Image 1: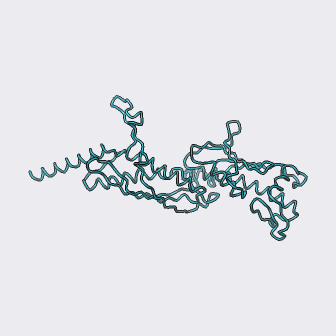
Image 2: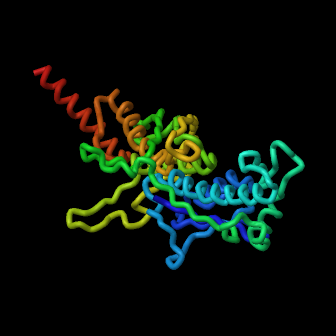
Image 3: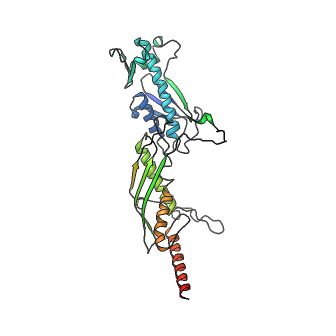
Length: 330
């Protein structure tokens, strides 16, 4: 599960608190976007806070591409509870059934009698100060917490003892065109296309950014990055002079083809996208390199496929071909 607390203060400002920390995945953007979508407020005006150890909310940390699913669902759930409270306040003060009300732009209006309406500011003021106008039994204030749970979590484990921890799965496909310089054995990625499906994207720029970054990481894993040790166990790649990372010179232009198959089990149809790019990138690049090497009868079965590793593979293939040729002659 994961959770979110949403609060609307007397000025009408919206604050959301999440029980997890971010390390660049833009959780703040996601939470403000989701809360703004439900309450019809501009995301830029919504403050998002991290709960500290004394105000922590139930959470399970940002791991396994779970935050858009879990934290997104929690933020939506808390915002919906705020929205429902505003509708109940409006129904009580306008003297109409809640089913007759429409919520638009933060304001509430009667569908049958459009002249009956209450603005966002008026509703907030009633909730905070004019508690004599609140429905019986309703506490003053606008603060709600929601804990979102995996929809299938209550059925775990299944009869055969299996556990499904995730409500949905994302998909991606990588198509890579590479070439190898026969003199230097350097690999150049000529073209890179990634088809990506994480359901409904809450923040497309964030999803694309994680996909770009994941592919760059995958390129490094496939072609450059290696923890090297001496026979005595001494680390030989303890600095970035020896442990190589891809730069803008090595990462090619990347084409991302968006595809959307909404999940029926999440709030907006979203799926996880944190591992976007990285899971498929090393395998696709390694396969492309081996495809090129196959024309020379060579192959590599380990990463990274450095120029030295490619040079060694080509020379072993040539030596084997020469030996086979000599055997035929004799």
